[in-house]
Length: 475
Image 1 (cartoon, helix red, strand yellow):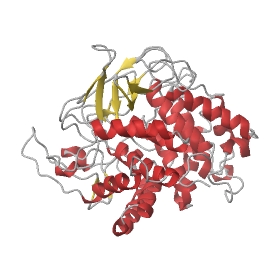
Image 2 (tube, rainbow, N blue to C red):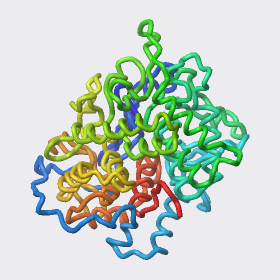
Image 3 (cartoon, rainbow, N blue to C red):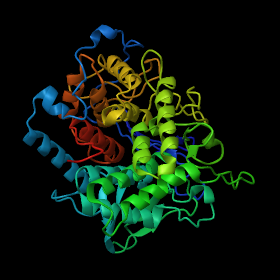
Image 4 (cartoon, one colour):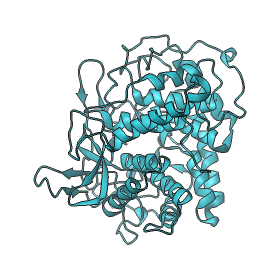
């Protein structure tokens, strides 16, 4: 998820693969090193120079979204049958989890779709592995749990949660009170030294990455709604503890560079999520961490006394998603100050541009719209994305995935992840090409091989949304 003022993503534009792994990899105090690995989808087109701005106007908006929320867009826009959509989802998810695919429970870097692995010494614990960076991230673990609850994979959900609680979560009596119930963002598994007993390694004070914590809480609340909390895991209590900690944990002062100040994930003055709740990284945010739909879920199922506070956070995030976007293209930067001004992240980084983290923003806005906000600002912002990218599509992908916010300096080739989030945006867009975005997702190849982790994880979230299967309630 992050980068030391960035987040370690692996960029594979076109021919050469340039591996950039920055910042505290596994160190106790290291700030998360840039987002999840990307890897450039092999189906992507050449980078497009393109004109800086989209060029279309609001005359390219058609129809109405009334009654077209949280529905199967593959069916309504592409006329796919229920059986076809079910097969599409099941195949994609089974590949990710290694269900019935013949892919072994072995950490293989260069081939396959599988990202879910169980500890051979204790199969009741499982993790999501990033092959390109050879690590485990809170983001990927929480995505795995979210996909599992949406697809009714109860056993896989519980195994991921047991690993998470055992190795990632800060206990309530941890010395860093500001991070009680939060999660270490990164760790590693050594499957080589003893193939029958994989060693799990996490730094004692490895920092949290807030988006992972937000997804953990949401997945647990949804697990309670889907399966109840009377079994081996009290999902509701676990979720409420995390959500409460986000609001109420108390900052711990620092005493120099070796022990910086630590903070709660939700800044109490700004009423919004911070980038990393430590030191100077606590002084700005990441637009892709803003998940107003999840905050509304916390308001509904969390502690009653926190309901109003979470609704304030949700409204703050909606306003921030407008404020931090480019006025014309609608593109968001990876990082931005609390007032929405793009933040490069320091150390010659370029996180003031539309890069890997920012791919998720259009989907976050669509989820909020589809789950019930019906906020016209979210629709407007999503339609700006569609207007911008409508002239930058290939037959089944995007021409380029990385841009300066005004739409210039495109690079990066195609991306299954961005293709998926743009398709999910059709839940809250009336753009004339919304069916084309959905069709691109249907046709794009699922990422496999070394760079599968981030591309595939975000792809699955977008696929579930577009199919109307990313739900907050079930019949």
